[in-house]
Image (cartoon, rainbow, N blue to C red; front, side, top):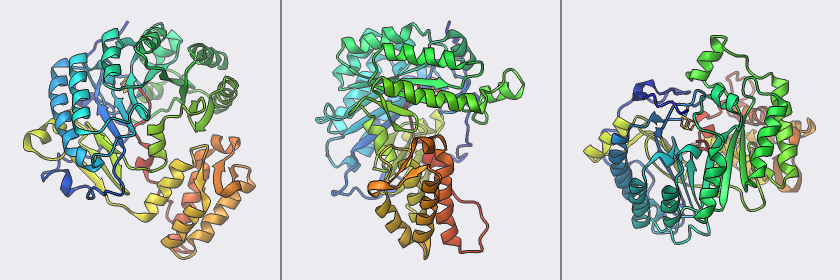
Length: 451
Ligand code: SF4
């Protein structure tokens, strides 16, 4: 049964310390973001809904346990933020919208109608049916009214946080939904015409066997999903899961079992027609998450809601993570932004490698070498040598003008990316430097498909 424990804001677990600065004491977004560029309007929008019914023990996303009295003020603030962000789309039709969290499906239908009306009022959603409008849903919270409201508002894709169909493993994760509600929610989405449906699953849960994981994959495939995301359980700092592990309550899955599960995932999902297009994401042809592809291809996206992070022409920003701070900025007429990073060529290039190499399509090798050449003397050569080294190890395929991870390379994606980032860093500091390579941490923190 669900645990209805209420958790105040300050008990939320964060993996990485978020900035402990207050909301920016200044004017609005216009002074913080690059001027809207008619040649490059933002075509993607991420919206973060911070409420959850219960805090899952492995989760380091920003979320607070739902208190319904705060949903309405949140929506008021969100609506005003959407209006302030609209100029960066310059009236061009949005191609993707992704509402994540938290648990967006916890918002009541009347509040959802306000959000959807605001999106329609401030942005051009005329082409969203040809694009993608995704909402993350917890299967437990899905109702016929909610699904009908979303479908009427243009939502054409839902991502369900199933994680596992095994009650014991859900309990280990402190997920509170009943696995039988996944097919129920699945059918409710289909009944209102939302046929693009994705499932999130987690493997390498303490106590989970390869057979258990296979059973989860088979149950998921019985639903005939168009898209599946499979993540190995990670023990982020400052989560309840990590604290329980440190107290010796359970052992982590052995590395060789985790690797076997990863390989089994690839074989099973490929065999069912879902190919891997990103390290952890699988889709039928044409059913890839276009919104997440915008992140991984380093395109521009706007972001609204507490803790949301946006990107426009190399500049990145983050919103105030705490709901109270986020709400307060609205009262003062300020942007809710607490962190802005100006474009920086080396960081941008490392991010392109970091996210691009995680994709099956890889990166355009001539383009990244050209950008490396502009960074520092010798950077292009060092990067080319590092890529050749990874190719020699069988981890990188350099054919047809692109660098792509091989199946073995996907298993060691982090080390391949680190080797390339190290080559860029070495070029910048010269032959005698000794600093560690600087891989931007936030590049891996994009709002993903997890609920
Ligand atoms: S995993 Fe999803 S549902 Fe669970 S606490 Fe985190 S954001 Fe909320």
